[in-house]
Length: 231
Ligand code: OAD
Image (cartoon, rainbow, N blue to C red; front, top):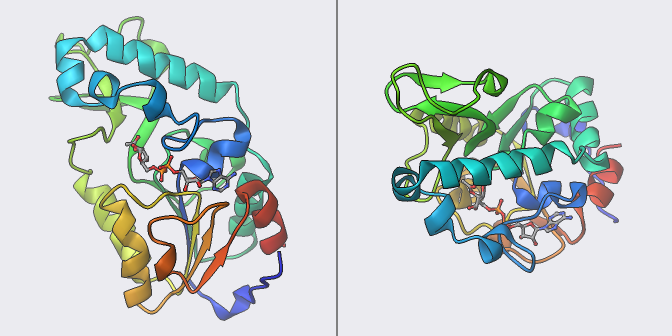
């Protein structure tokens, strides 16, 4: 990798991450070979209609995913971003990932755009993070608790979206890692950053839908590129 960045030239840096960020931790991506949506139909496991039809089936799918994620550990790329955040101010992560890996690596300023595998919510009574407290996922009001994830057809949480937009429109360096750039509104973030004047860099072993927007594209894997880039 030849690109060197003088990070002292930048005040507000956003890492915008997608499933490819966690691929080297053995968490499957969504698309491409081995992608989750090839194995599982999202219509059966990742939308409100599926949950209303068969909550136990959808909850079991998410329980399996949670267990699988907990068997994985953050890789050198996650650790490099965490070390980078500790070393200076003005670093934020806006992630589409629901796997909690940035938290486990030690990052603090994380905006989880699509929610978290490690929270559930009652449609009437809000979110719970203490998943261990539930033997069956039901709120005290009797409703099933659904995963606090932005499923297909859901709107993004307004507060989370506003925070992400504020970070992205005020950053001067935007580093995208491991996203295909096909899921909106997240797919529009590089353009927002670019219009705000940020330098936009993409890290991905393959071109994404949004590659044309980036000033620099580093073709490679997160776990190999980031430790070098953020030295
Ligand atoms: P995708 O599965 O669509 O794309 C993963 C991207 O990661 C692809 O562009 C790969 O080329 C790239 N990639 C693979 N291995 C990599 C590696 N080692 N290092 C860097 N990049 C790598 O995942 P997302 O773009 O995150 O939503 O998908 C967006 C959303 O669609 C997800 O948040 C999810 C899904 O439906 C929800 O679950 C709510």
